[in-house]
Image (cartoon, rainbow, N blue to C red; front, top):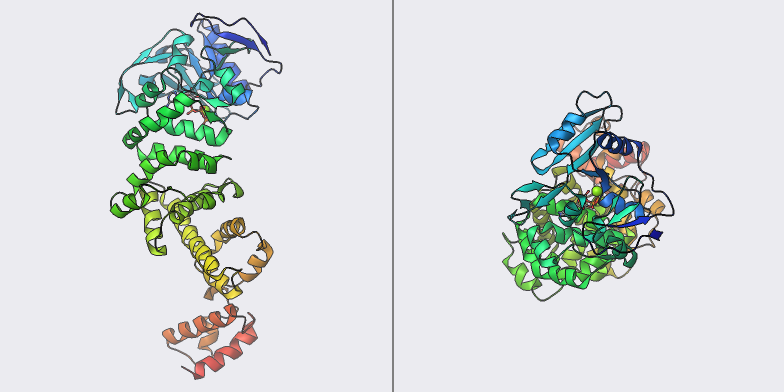
Length: 450
Ligand code: ATP
Ligand code: MG
């Protein structure tokens, strides 16, 4: 990198030429070019610049401009390649959709934010005319970097140094900034978990001091940040280090029925650190990461499996998790908790029949996920052996059906059902192979015992 001398003027950024030219997608370049052709200034800014400098592929690209929402729409009106959508025009945000790829890029007017309402949404947005103003309203210094038209990094707030030090620090006075919008607390922890950065001391103190303001946040916002945090490589470390912060929201999720929870958890950790160690051993699949989190939450308390299931259900529902997601997580969680509880009490690998009985409680399409969880806890168990054990887990998978039993002169539906269940039990116990003839012979014997 080559640098120009540091500037003391907040309106003049440090400009740094990178050794490797960053790769900006063509669509983004095109939008920048069009806005500049119309006499506006426009910059790529925020998380995408941060990710480029960390050699990570940005999830999304954001553009900031001095054009007002109206002016952006006017510039892109009647174009063959783009159309505009007013996705948040009152906050200065326009979505430009590339017609060919149907991709939407957010273009935001420079702004100076003022009053915050309920610690979340700015009460009024004042559009700014300069990038130097816009960077000040952003959350962290690493998120306030921009590329200029020559693809030099523009750094007004010391973001580059933070990237070098691998640290997260608020722009301005941390307590003030976190009180303005308490989602930034979770964002800081999320960046910490995903980037493996530390948190600057003042920002760290402010995170703890402002943590209770997170109770004003909507569950959707919390869930979305928690999800991203859980997928981070360092999530287990962050959940331990900032236990006190997560406690505030988790106790709130469980507050309706769990008065005892708060007394139990008041002075003890929210998550069991050994159970959290499962997190980095799991693939980046949200359902699995949530199971591990709920397991670590359960293991920090002395509660029954039933109570644990209730708590898990309440947490997912407080976060307004989609039904399908919650069902999947809860089913995997209960089976996993059952597995871990039995395994601990037997202090060695479970017998085949015990494993099979647990597998029976998991939907066939979720079994591979379940094996992943089991193997993260108990690597001795090989996937192939788990698959072999799960070959037959329900009546439908038997090589015999109700009509076959009927042909043995059993007409009562309940009797047919009972025989099929007993056949399944015999197959699970390896007493009978799952072949049509063997099952038919067995069914004849069972019929006599009815
Ligand atoms: P991700 O990798 O998840 O996209 P990001 O930092 O890009 O992370 P976005 O939600 O895409 O996050 O936001 C883009 C930019 O907008 C941020 O980099 C930051 O500059 C600014 N920003 C986002 N949320 C806030 C906030 N709550 N307060 C202040 N600035 C914010
Ligand atoms: Mg982003």
